[in-house]
Image 1 (spheres, rainbow, N blue to C red):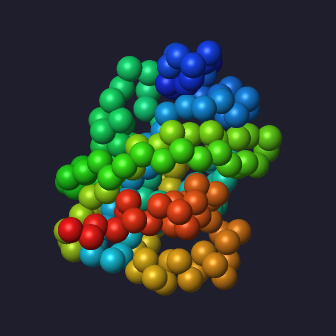
Image 2 (cartoon, rainbow, N blue to C red):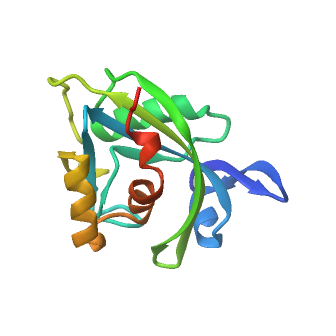
Length: 173
C-alpha cells in the first residue's frame, strides 16, 4: 500500500491510497509551495524516477499531506525533503482546486493549499536527487513567457497556477 492521503469518499474526508486516488481521479488534498525572491521564483525539474510527470518543471515543491497531517506541516516537511530548505517562513496564500491529466492514465483532482515564502539571497538549496533533477531561479514574467513558448516542459498544475492563480503567488502587499 502506498501513502494514505486525505481523499473525499462519499463526501467525507477519508484516508486513501495516494496512487489509487490518482488512478481513479478522486478529489484529494494537496499542498504547493512557491519560494520567492521578489519577482523571482524557485522552480524545480522533477526527477526522472517520479511516477508521473518526470523531467518536467514545476513550482518549488508540491506534495500530499499524510492522513492526519496539517497542510502547513506537510509544506515545511516536503520543502526540507525535496530541496533541503528549512529556513524559509511559509505563509498560507489561498486554496485552489483543479483536475488535470498527468499521463499514464493518472488524474490529479486536487484541493491545494498554496504556501509562499520569501527566501534570503544566500539561501542554501540541496536538492534530493530522488525527487529533483535541477532547480533554478526565474523571473515570473520570463517564466510566463517560457511556459507560453514551451508548455510541454512544465507540469499541468504549474501551468494552471501561473495562468489562473498568479495573484495568490505574487505578494502585492
